[in-house]
Length: 347
Image (cartoon, rainbow, N blue to C red; front, side, top):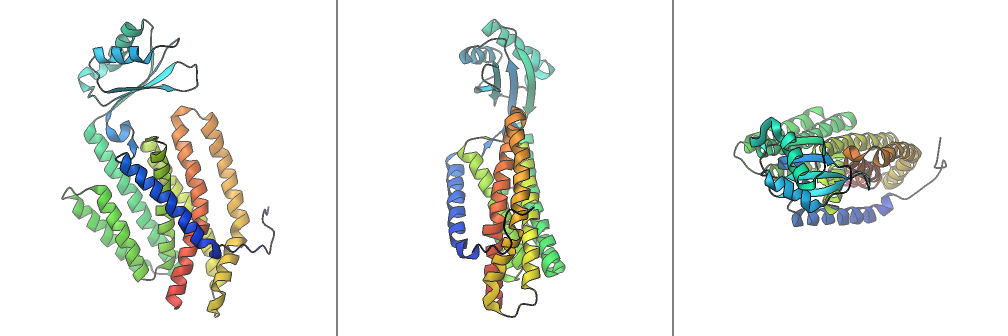
């Protein structure tokens, strides 16, 4: 099936500056939001604390819920409606350490809420995460994203440029540097950000043009997705990390398809002035497949978003953002960067 007629010529390389400006605006908006909010709105997984999902047979006053929890020793409580309107379900978060309540947490919360509201609550879910566990999960999540990006660059360099050794040594050195510096308790986000910047400089210097195009596009996708979550003040949990890793895989697959066609079309070309046309032709030739793949994936994700329930709502939303941004980045970020690197190499 072809949505784009054969012979269609859209000048994507000519629009690359507009694409860069649009992406820069989105990234800066996300970074400003992250600074204002002091980072993502971490969920219980990362921030630590206690989460309780409770359902009542009829509407109750939020102040009564807070009063009942205060009486059992849970402070700094946040209460919000959960699920469909009229479901009388509430999500209760608290940063208080509930370990003292032990295995009786559910029974204690139930009794406190019953005394305060005069209604029998249905405790649907209870989650407790200590602050140390939350910090460990945060570090491991960042490392998972960082390592996945580095291993991807090794694959891209070997797959398209036959530079397995150079890419492997570079990635290994960066991983070792991050590991040893982390021993000195330096900020993990700072370490990984610095390592990624050094990676980009090295890949550019070593002329790993496909690798730098891929890693910039993937960083672009992850940054924009996290930025949107910060702008909307949505919970950032382990589910979202899983979504980010899935987005990286999807975006990479789409990028590789375009890179394959670029390599095929550019192979044996001796007229360097035709390079922009070759890149445009490569993207246009894969455009039908890209649109079809993204559309069918979005149909499934939209079904999950609207029909899957609140538990996977944020996961589905992150995936929707990632699929749209990943498709966009394959065309307007990854390919133009390879084009610029190729032109610089030939120049």
